[in-house]
Image (cartoon, rainbow over all chains, first blue to last red; front, side, top):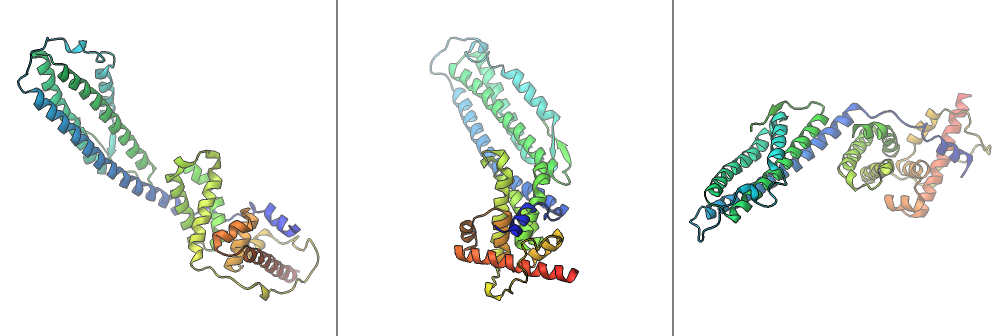
Length: 185
Length: 159
């Protein structure tokens, strides 16, 4: 390597050009939010499919359970069901619901998220029927379904909270964040 | 992400501009490279290597843009050296050197930038640009000689 090549190599940092124009960052943010929105849209469709399938399973289960029993069972208190007491579902759900209630999302995502929350709310009607059923006649299967209801609801709300967080993070990174609206519970 | 952009944008734009010699193309390449890096950042095992990884993406984007209209100049057109002095470049402002590099023909400028500033080997340059290793070497020597001729002329005129 000649002295001139060494001289150039040693000064490559000093030969730096100017900063990129501000539009470059704006375009990056825009490209990221467009791609994220596209992936979120796919994710919502997937979510709606999963939620609808779960709902169908629960409704089918409830229908099956509401048919006359083939044999009589010994009534037992619902809370005595193993695994139920340990998991503190009610408290966890309270925290999650309060978190969703306190959040606000960009207006364009309100419908998608609201649809998911409506599906979750529909689970509650099935739950109420199952609990009523348990109070009159205990069934191990129905108790299992109630447990499953809690697990499903916690999982769905956890994912909805994550989606809200993700949407808001992408929106905050935009040059002009969207108007935020609350979600109804 | 903004802090990564702030930390690297200038160096990336410099690299991109040296290769493309065209600010809009350079900014496009930098923008596309940052978007790609942010989307694939999870694949990066060591975050301290982000800068090097990003620079590779920037260079690839630039070369993709350049390949379509890359212009090569035959090395034989060069003028002979006018001095044997080893330190002939002393006293020439860096800005003149930067401009002289920009005025090199596309092909030889890209080889010079990749070899001298980005530490690519001639084998890698040959692969990236679709040329032979000997062409890469001859274009590099041609770029150096052409720079020397041009800068010596500047120095002569300045005196």
